[in-house]
Length: 291
Length: 284
Image (cartoon, rainbow over all chains, first blue to last red; front, side, top):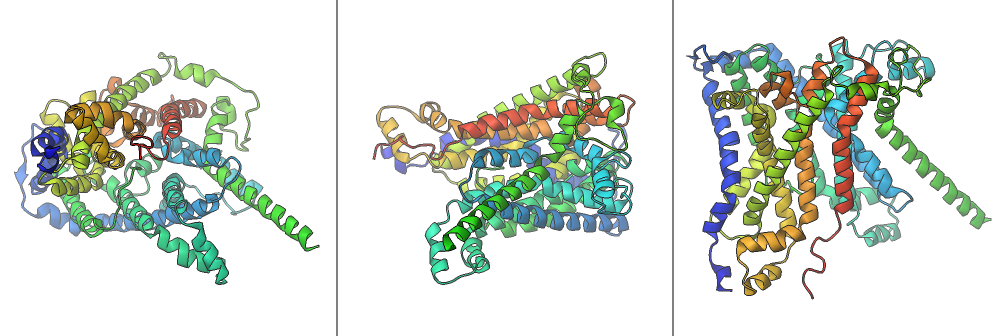
């Protein structure tokens, strides 16, 4: 029993060693080596030697119009997809916050798009939005007459951009939905009843009861989803080659143009941007059991 | 009169609600429906310019084809994905249990620092590390091996594993441990005999999460793997997109089979998760 007051440092070191060692070796050390690599001109071929170029990678990147455009595209993608998936998740959670038949089954079905691997979903979307025989254009033009002429979804940057934003909203709203539903189910029903007695409208109840109750979850979802979408790569890369978000720009700099030094300097710039966000958010983001 | 109208109102609202639910489910499930139906369509029917929802002649040929290694290396990709995801998820959970226990139950200097640094790592990962990780993996002689991918996936999922497990362990009351210590169990025995059994449903969720991340990974697989014998599903299937082997029905069948393990695991883990993990652990 007297063990309680003592520090458990020895055991903690043993238990945490594997985790800390792996994280140091494969996250902390790589991040530091990013900084080192970013000052060199480093070809991908290990037999060619690296030359020290000082800040040249940084000046090239920061004056590159493509990089700035890519950053703009990424921010727009992030803002639209975060707003869309969070708002839709909240609406659906409020909709589900009542007992009804098949609630559990419906909830599981809605989560399907979130748990299915990107590669599977991407093939379905590519097929649905195909220019020639895609069902979306068929429904939109021939059946519902929503648009005059079928947009060639994958052929121009604007419609491709709309497509990847729609995909992100569709794929990630269930995450917001589950988180919001969990918190809504803990809100005391008597708060709503009290508001009703005071003659509050639906909107007032939402503003004065629901919003304050879900605030911590709302901040967490917006922060995490923003960070994840900020360095999104897979979904967009697999879906189209017309939307050059920052993750793809970085990947192509490294593995298509074989310019590791420049890619490392992009990583460092992004790291600085993200660190500011993370440090600012640390006090407010609650990590719960859904990664 | 008023009674009747309120009854009508109630019925109307109920109909409206279920209509909304149907629209919502349609949006959520439509791509899955298309996947399923296309996987039963002949190649010609799949590219008809006036698409139909249901196949005219149902064919199971695509499912037969993807499991035929002479036509399509699907099984090899599947096996590679399974090896990588299972190994990574098991190790991530195992390493995570010990780390999370220390952060949840032990008192020591530097705990806050470790928590904060894991939090930072949790948010920084993926694409930001591709260049140095590529260098490190090549330097270690692990380029084009599944080991490279497994190690990377463990690290990618570890911070989340630790945070999730820690939140489950935090719900296990201290009295339980104290009682166990009085009975003469040491800390390691406590982890195995008390913590793991009590948090088993949480541990299963963490395993499923880690498996899903590894199963889904395209980025690192595309950087580390070059021999198609080592390909996992995402890069294997994506590499086929621009080849003559690309047949819509077959790809849809492959996509569905690819989704099955994670969807199945998710369904099973949903079933396991219950409210309070330690209910009944301590008598009041």
